Length: 226
Image (cartoon, rainbow, N blue to C red; front, side):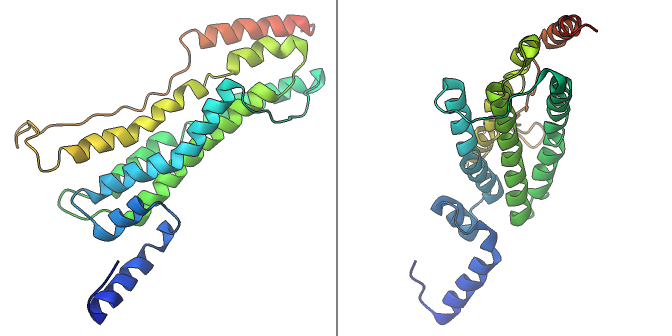
C-alpha cells in the first residue's frame, strides 16, 4: 500500500496499531478492518467466523471419515459410570454459551447508524470458534475412548448427538453474507416493513435421544447388577 503524505502514513500506522488483535489474519480481514466499508461489521464477522471455524469443520469431517486416530485411555468397568457422567456434564454445558455469545455479537454490531465494536466482534467470533473446537474434542473422546462392553451401547448413543449440530453453526457467516449483499440494492423492504434476514442457530438432540439413552442406561444397570 502506497501512502502519499507523511500525515497519511502516520494515520495509517495509528489505524494499524489499533487493530493489532487482527495481526496474522487473512488479507481480506485486514482490508475490511482498515477500510471500513459500509456494513463492515457484518463483513468482518462473516470473514472471521468463516476463517476461525474452518479448521474445526475440517477436523470434524476427517473424524467422521475415519481419516485419523488419537489414543485415549481405556475406561475400566469401575470408572465407566464416572466417565459417562462427565460426558453428560460436558454435553449439558458445551452449548450453554451459544445464545449469550450471539447476543453479544449482535450488540457488538452497534445501534443503527453507529459504528460497531471491532475488538468485541473479534473476541466473540473467537469464543464461538472455541465452542466448535470443544464439540469436536468431545466427539473425538467418544469415538476413540475404549469402554467396557456393558457401556458400549451408551457410548454409541452419545456419539454425534452434539456433533450433528456442528455444521449448522457455520450458517451464521452465510446469513451475514446475505445481509451484506442487500447493501445498496432494492431489497424489497420499506421503512414500515423492512426486509429481515433471519438465521436460527438450531441445536437439537436426536428425536429419540432421551428415550434411547434411558433404556440403554437401564440395560447397563442390569448388566452390572444394580
